Structure formats: structure tokens, C-alpha cells
Length: 635
Ligand SMILES: [Zn+2]
Image (tube, rainbow, N blue to C red; front, side, top):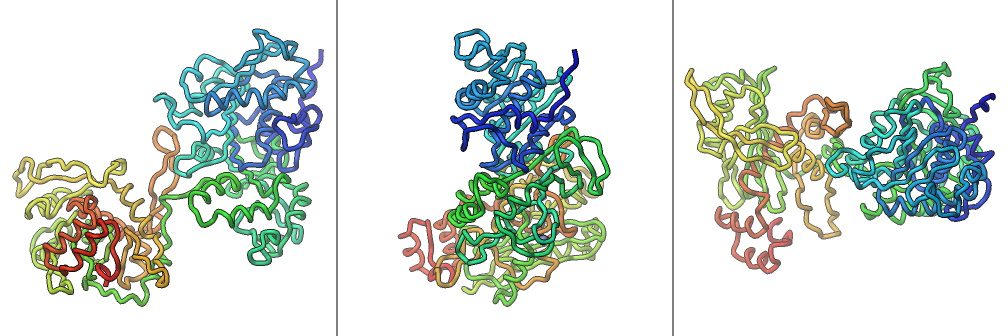
């Protein structure tokens, strides 16, 4: 007997698959849309062992999964399991998608002699077909559902809806991936509308893929192939979503949704980074058209802009309706664009901060009226030897003023009168800043990084009463701003002083995230009459290098030692000392207790310093310490 020639999934679906009334926008025989050909064939391609499908709503994803299930039962004769995020989702998927598919796709119905009958091969969570191939549909919340079943093809449906950790046993995709380890034709298909960037499972998986394919269509004017991005959609008449067209990234000419649908006939998928290209999901080339090996792990992104089930007017209308509300915008970005929502960790733009501070009335070393606490952060650099430091003023709502940024050059192992530490000593011992009330404020707490010149830092800190000058150590995984201080030994003049000083761990990742959210705050307009937001940061007219340094890091995906993708901070600008100094000064403020202080505590501190008028007290207290007006604190 001759084996039938292998048929690709998209071709099989066009010949055999049927869209059931229960789960389709239009009932009838399946026609693969141009943009669906590659993802469908990737689901069926035996050489692709892992396929991550990042998608928006309305790209026909559920139908494509069902087409793949039908193809793999009938044509490929595979055992399969579909995981849904919950048990309830699993049982409704069986009812709404699997059973109608069996009923309506003759090639599969012919293998289900038990259909519509009570039969051991026909249960609520599994079907055994007449060719002895099995299909399970299970919920993914319980670890036991990932045990024992051995299959060829595993589907994870809406992966970002799964628990990140299944009952303490690990990531759901890792547990599910074990189900086909024994198979010669093992395949793991994960599909999801993504969620928040830093915790998106599909995002983290696709970062480990060999390529991330995007659908390219040729420009109707200049033929330049490109993948569609929302930023290139424009309303030609302002405010009218129906006038939305697309600006070609090459010639700049606009084309319409209708034109894009016609151009899609000639689409192909390409990873813009690696150049890996495929027209059919079966064969792959490099960017010059030279054949390359089929990648074993493929990720693909496609979103509603390509879909005939929606149009650009609707995409733009939804965007306009939601753009003002971050939570609604997040849903829109996930559902319509099929992209993760980036909330935290992105570096603010240094240019914007630089521009914002041009022409400011704020002078270095001149205190703003609302400042009631001064702290300092010190970074120790060996080569070239220097101390860099920032002096920061703090007020209600943890608003800050950068009082000064200084660099003391010299040998950082030299604590003597000619070294850089002597200049730091002078600031801590004798420098003060005059408040408009005439009161002088000294630095209340100084945090010194002990990562370099550790013993010198300990010895220096020990000169002062604790915790006036404290050694700190950045701990990336610490989930509090400062940890519990630990005693450390100090070597001094050849003697070892047991428990000479307390070392403070500092949650630097947490603090960078916090600082960057503060730096991205918008100044309220004069007309709004609103107060400056909590966390607002004021700077004098520092130079470009300062702001580049302050915004020098971003969150990026990295592989950890175990090979998993994790989020970590990475430098995008070499000189990051301004960022470190600010974070250390923030830790010093935390040691002083600012995170516990209410507006009323701030008021009491100001009163105790003698920098507040009597009437201010009444007015602020009357507001229960929640808000305060410019006429009191800010004038
Ligand atoms: Zn063009």
C-alpha cells in the first residue's frame, strides 16, 4: 500500500475543513486567507517543534487550532492534547469547538463512529477516534492534568491566561512540554493574546525562539514589502476614523484598507531582525532568498490590521475611544494589536527631561521652599578614581529637588586629607543649605555604595554616627527598598573590628522602576490648577550627560543561567552614575523613613525645623493629610 502524499495543513483545510455555525463569524467551507497560510502550515510542519503564535483578536485563531486538530487526527494520525487556562474553559472549548468540528468535518466524522452516542471513547474531556488516535482537552490550573498523558502534539490555548506557576511545579508551558518528550513527531503549539510585557508567558517564550515572523505585504505604490504597524495608520481627515489609511514606510504614500487586502495575496512572513523568510510556512530562506534550515522554534505575530473580519476604521475608532484611560488602552493594545503592554521599566527619554529643565528658575544649592529633608547618594569609581554624588532634597509626596551633582577625582582608596573622601567628609560635617525661612539644613543621611573599595567605604562610614552615613549594597532581587541591615567587620590599620558597621541591602531594581515612573510624570498645565504629582522630580539646568546618565538603563529580556528568559536591567548609556547616585540617595531617604510619612508627618517635621507657618497647619489638617494646595506648601 502506498502512503498518501503529504498534504500541507492549509491545503488540507481548504479541501476538508468546515466552519461550524456555533463558533464562526460565517458558517461554511473553510478558505485559508492569505495571511493565515503561514501560521496554519507552521502548525502542521513536522520540523517545527515549537510554535508560538502571538495574535490579536479576530485573526481566526480558534478556527486555525481546530483545523490543525482535525488535520492531525485524520491526515497525520497524531495523539493530541489541548490545554485551556481553566477547567471551565476546557469544557466549553470541547462543546463549542471540538464537537461541532467532529460533526461538520466529514474526514473526522468518519473516524468517530461513536458520535452522538454514549461510548467510552466519547467522554467530556477526551475523544478516541476509530484510528485509535486520542484527543484530550484539559484545564491547566491543576498539576495533575499535566501528568501521565503521552501525546505527539500539545496545544496551549491563551497561554497568558494560565497561572505563571502551576501549583508550585513550574511554568505551565514547561510542564506541558514534557507530555510529548517521547514522541518522534513532538510539537508544542502555544497561542495567546499577550498581556503585560514583563509577565507575558508567550512574550517570554517567543524571546527564546529562533525567529519572530511578521506578515509583510507589498506597498501598492512602490511594492516595498513591510509589516503593518499601528503607528503608520493616519486619519487623513482629523478625527474621522473612516479616513484611516496607511503610510508606506518606504515611499510615504498612503494606501487604504481595501488596497492592503488586495496586496495581501502576495504576502510573506519575515523576521525583520534575522531576515528569515517564508512564503508558505514549509520552506525558509534568508533575506536574499537563499534556502536555510527550517527553524526548530518559531514565533509569529499577526494582528487585526490584516484581518477581513474587521477594518482600519474600527481599529482607529476603538483606539480613540480608549486612548485616555490606561487600563482600557492596555486591553486595546493586547486585543487589537496583539502586543504586550509595557508599563514599567522603559527608560524615560532623557531629551524630554533635558528640555523640561531648560530655563528653570531652580538653581543648584538653593533649596526649594517645600524641601524638609536632605539626603545624599555616593558612587565609588576606581578607574579613573572618583566619587560621584548627588545631594537630593525631599518634600511631601516624596517630591524631590536635585540640589547638586558633584564629582571628586582622586584615589578612592585614600581616606587621607588629600584624597576625594576628605571632600565628602567636609560636605557631611559642615555643609548646609539655607531654606527661605532662614533655617539651614545639613545632609541627614548619606548612602555610599560599597561594591568597590569595600573596606575603605566601611572605614569611612564608621567615622560617623550610624545611620548618618551608611554603606549600602545593591541587591537586584530584594523586594523592599532597603533590607534589614547586617553587621559587617571592618579592617582598620591592620586590625579587624568585629561588627564595626551595619551594611544595608538596597532593592535597586525596585528603586529604578520607581524612579523611572516618577521621571515619566507629566507636569500639570497651569490652567488645570493641579498640584505637582507625588514623586515629581525637579532638576536645575544640568548638562546632557547628566540626563543621559539618569536615563541610562532599560529593562530587557535576558537568558539566565538555567536558560530561561528573565527581565533584567541593562545599560543603554555607559555613564550610569547619575542613576546610581539618585537611587542611593533614595535609599537614604527610605532609611530616614520617608515611605511612612504622611503629609501630616511632613508638616510636623517642617514645624520642628521651624520652616512652617502656623496657619498652614490648620489648613492641611482640615484636609486630613490627603492633599495640599500650592497656596500652602508650594508657594
Ligand atoms: Zn510604498
